[in-house]
Length: 548
Image (cartoon, rainbow, N blue to C red; front, side):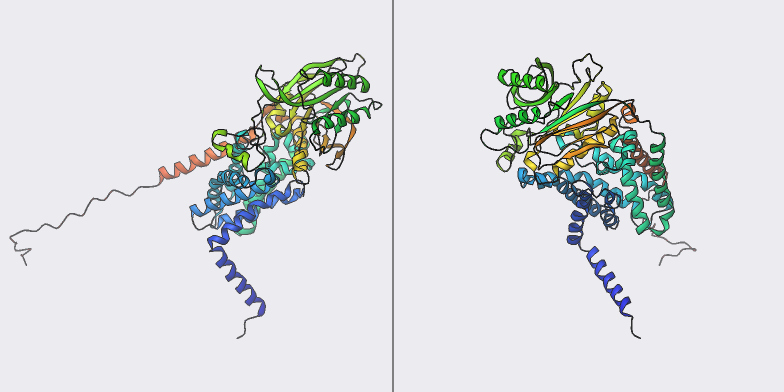
């Protein structure tokens, strides 16, 4: 009897697949590649829809791991692939050190690999499958929380941030921040694994998907949204790439030239990017005078960013990155010193141990100093019913990646969030687009419009709900663009209640641990068995038991 060709092909493919799944080397490579896939959901590819299935290959692989140890290894390798893919644009700066960092941070996913195998491995019961839709996303969220610590690189590449241009997801962010969006994405991926690999668990998988849909719908209908409360005209000045020995001076000249171009645009505020001024304005009064004249010429305050050795607001002397507001009469006195610094870019953690990184890349040769506290700047009142008295919440560079910082500024009364950034070292990579997209999340979370102003692009502005205002200023542009930005009143649930999804995730994991401990205690224990006693031997027999 001849076997049909199609059946032979399927049998051959199944046999080859089984052999590959038994190969540790193949599984290791597959874990690295599968872990890197979610990076495609972020800018510049921005395949936001891909985030909802991007984790399936990785999770399907880990659930078939033959042992707990193997699941941990594949969790670690996938985490390493994800971190390197998300930060690949740092390769020219860190070189091989990027792989070291990726390997170290990838260890955070080793316990998650064990969690995936324990919840999805084999044929999970209906109860275990239903629990998996909550437990696995909670485990991932705790990883995001841990790696959001500044010393570990900060919250760059949180999975929920891939949904920055999806309006329903932005509405969800106003309820629970980017954390709640990450939970949604992970829950959908977990349900997808159950649908694909565990036919018996399709009912809880579909139920979990329906719950996710209901959560998004509820946020869309009932979540309070800030209401428009006036408008402000903001000019964003982007000088573009300026290189050479005198690049600092020529960048200042270019910013000055571009700012004068908007003097007839009735702007209320001009924003320059990070490191737009390369000298302390107290030590260079000539620059302060030029900025004051510029402010008078355009009829608006100018928010610049000073990257220079100076004395910080705390009284400490060193190199600071500071947002400084300059008006027609000169520096207003409002100054914010950057608090959270970029590891290796602005300081080297444990420099005594890791200082060698400066010899293999572009790590900071000298550590920048930190500011003491966030600052809400108040623009002078104009007495004409305009935006005079507008309260500004400045952030510098990758501080826009931290949800808690924009939330704190909003609670302190900021009406407009402003991030001053410089990604000139990463032109041609995905970094400028990724950085600009973060402002959409911060605007949606806080219910406040946000301006993302850079030296070389991408610069962008977002309204209070996270929707884009005007056009992006790309990395190929040197110019000044005026944005008509709607202000907003009101408070989002995220501003009011903070990072509650993180605490909920921790509670889910604690409940899982408690349930496991309870089962262990209830499990009947075997009675202890001592050593078998030897048979009694006697020298004399009896009529019943004669000696033989």
